[in-house]
Length: 131
Image (cartoon, rainbow, N blue to C red):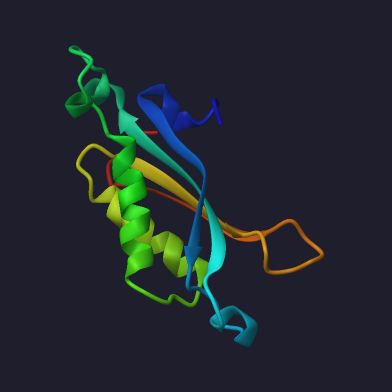
């Protein structure tokens, strides 16, 4: 992902492989218990606003924020679709004033025995973000 155009003026923060039990799905077998969802999340933050001068966490976007957004959405209860889950998380991430763009990937690694995972990835940028 190092060639992503947003990286010309932005820092890429990422949370990779966050595994969380989620009540998600539409099939009968999915409704019986939470399923493991694995999240890969990228945030693009402007370099001008997140280059720490004093080496303080307040000068950057804290990684804890990303985990908290995921946990807060999961805590709201059952969701039918991975697309909706990803969109909800993206909206919350983009509400942070320091985040210019974000990507959320969700995957269900335990749904089908004949494939590694099924998933969705969505990318969104705030209006006016320069590519």
